[in-house]
Image (cartoon, rainbow, N blue to C red; front, side, top):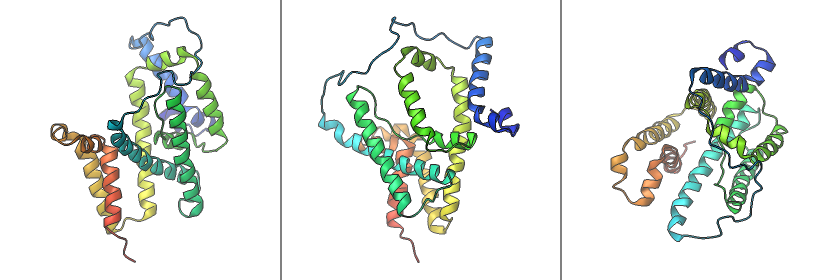
Length: 253
């Protein structure tokens, strides 16, 4: 990926992630680190079924899932704002908030459809911002095309088996690059908002809680279940800290 990026050629930049995957699979294959995927049951294609696991509801899971979705909304807001910035769009004003509302609604609808088909809920991923920075492609027209491709590939069990067989070294290398670029996107948003003393305090405490809370696993286990759900995830702990401080520390004009 680094070699493709360093060439400066548009086609190499567009294909850098694909080239990195191919190179990683080749190296792992020659080194003997590539394991064969799980054996097939003979099924070539799987058609989704409505409510394959029936319908059930548990009141005990309502509050934990509500907090999880709140955290998911906070993450999605940041992801979509970073995407807008990388796409050259305005990240303030009514138009931006209209995009954010549309994105949150889309997350909710896809999660409902996923549940009806027996799948897990879905959410936005910050790594997509890293892909935009690597490839330079942020066109909205690409989104529906990629969605159709992923939906079609999901019908073939063989695709899923080979993806799950991906060696950890390849996934780790991609994550190293993409998560680093996600951090850069966050720094750009912070820079654009202005690093006032108020904002610096919110950022410092949110990062401290987000990075520190998950390291205190033994202490977190002694807390009530709802609090555990909040502090178990660094994103949840840091995001809710930032949300609370943003309300407590009012902007002075």
